[in-house]
Image (cartoon, rainbow, N blue to C red; front, side, top):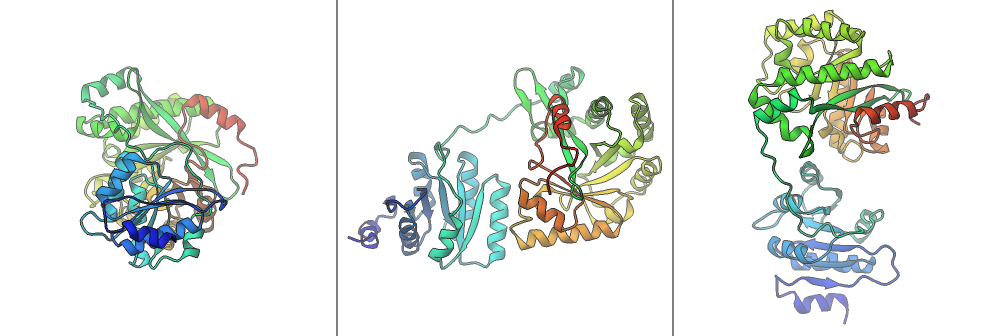
Length: 422
């Protein structure tokens, strides 16, 4: 009995998991689950996968798909975007909540729709290895699976959801007072020669009982409790102290600051006193200006930021292209650096749209005489494309994750004088 006949023998039971063994001796054997509401299409993909040497099964509804994942291991899911009931986007959202599963998307829609779906999946933390336009061709499917290796464990089984921390303003005030809020430092690398030019100080909460708490968990509490100034002062003091300790006059440290703090009458004095205390100059500090408020820029904000530049402090427009950042900010405020958000870096080397957006952002920044930094670069391909598009500096896991000061000392000491290999 051939595989197609075998599948059709049971295809009338839509809740049944259809399983086909991979061909022997065909190389790396992956466990793959296919979700498509059209049985003929799903079974055809399974047959292709089997002929390529993989173990494959298919389901026709999202309910049966998740029941399978509860019981069985999967290295990869091939998911159709357009299905009745829960579509592929909703399925991927649910996968991200409880599973660590690589995804291959398929659909009859044009590539722009597929690209958008891939970006959506990646925003949920899923690894999307590629897209398969319909009708699916065996040669394209084979190429998509070339570099995929089976996972050693079974991360697709249901795992407990992360505990949601119940953090309060009082807890945060105590943390600030007791020195529990500490900087982690992420290096920044020049693309012209691969040299180290400085680092960004990123807030972490080192809780004595809960461990290291990431900023996404406590920054909302900071905003709600009105503790922006206290957090900034804490980060500024520790960042400047660390920079002075490294004794590298060619470095600058970047610290995030809400735009509304820059408008305070005493803000310039606060900065001047801090750098003087640590024996530094304004050029050693880059202020990454963030803003979650209205798009309209007040005259007071323009004056305040211009005054900081006149006094030698460098300004960066942080996470440009997201939130409330706008071309108005870019034109009216004398920023030194345009920082392209990691959202656009995700697909810089694999998506023509992502590449085009970054190219335009670089051109806007260069027209205004700004240095261009792109964050979120995670591999060699992203670094190469960033250089080709005209970015000046990269930041991301390809260089280093954010690290504590002790690790940064060792990292700087070990960094090659000639910089990263190009």
